[in-house]
Length: 266
Image 1 (cartoon, rainbow, N blue to C red):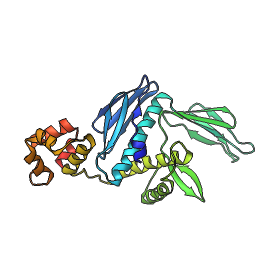
Image 2 (spheres, rainbow, N blue to C red; image 1 turned 90 degrees about the vertical axis):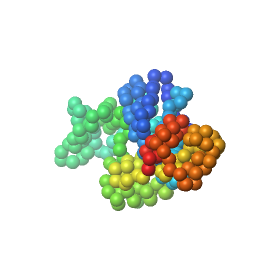
Image 3 (cartoon, rainbow, N blue to C red; image 1 turned 120 degrees about the horizontal axis):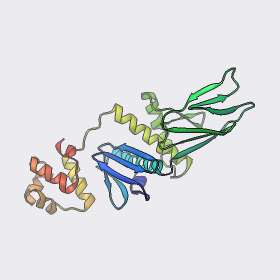
Image 4 (tube, rainbow, N blue to C red; image 1 turned 180 degrees about the vertical axis):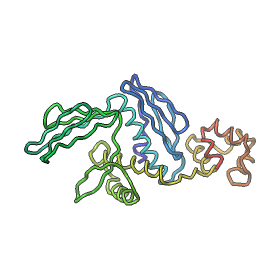
């Protein structure tokens, strides 16, 4: 997902973003959206854009990189343009109408189907066979491959759903951006990330790996690191695991290199 993650998310006029730890808050004309990233990535607001960078080169870090960027882009879209889906009902005698906050559907049964519209979602039925759904947040969806067709359900509920979703991600991995398959891939990665955050413990990166990765990102050399923590010899000992980081070193590296304290304390 690095091809997605590399591109910063621009903030249009009237939209602001603030980062606090692993949480980014986006404010715009239509409301406020927040997204909390895992410790696999770093978030920053620079030059009217939100950038995401991975902490490490593991497969999970690369996945979280692209997924987090997609989530933040969705937040920006939600508070500016919002999301809209137009649905068409096909069937003899089929029709839809709104009764307050309830969508009433006549679908050929002996009774009407009533659907209560969730908070934060707007549903209208401008025509008997047309339904328009709008909101600032993409609904949580799951994608299943049924007889070669992609259909949507609610969310990943268990390990079987999780494994099925991973299999579908593999099939869609090379999908191009801004295509139906690419959009589905983005939704799937979000669902998988949410499920993994709730059900799998994410261990913080090794402190030395975190330092080396950050040094590579900003083009820092070992002698430059030495200037921050007390000399080239000390820097060499830290990098090769011969000396432990002190509280003062941890504080300095966190502030000067923007490395989360959690990554340096593990």
